[in-house]
Image (cartoon, rainbow, N blue to C red):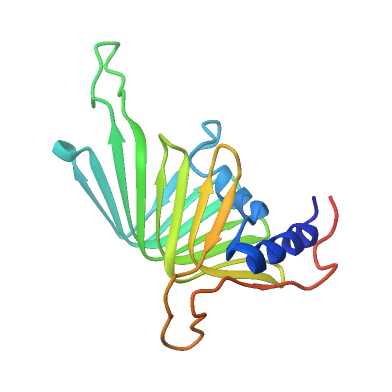
Length: 189
């Protein structure tokens, strides 16, 4: 399904239910942390490791890259599951169970971007939730804006919702998801 067709369907869904299911944007997150064949590279100004809590916190201009997907934020906390040691030749038996990013989160993959104030990735449930005053999803000139994006990394299902109450300040949407589509703006693959 092309992006413009999907956005047309999402627009109707917004009018009928107030929730947009923008599945194409889920592609931005589908590979992040779940593609074990690609290395994950992390850069930050500082790293704090707390072995007793099985956490590592990256602080200051954090950049995470895996394949064609990148995440930029001010603070990224990584939660590990499992023990830090193993009887099998000293192999580490830890894996990432959850990521929490805050301080502005910007995710890009190919021509798609998503930005918000905070995001959490539950690797066990394979769910990503991005929240913010404005969660902005874009692909080229096409834009969707809400306050909470939930993506099932396994199925690719994505839902964008708006706040139930009034949103104050500039650009306040009064609890509505906004969609801007430029027809014929995304080429067929």
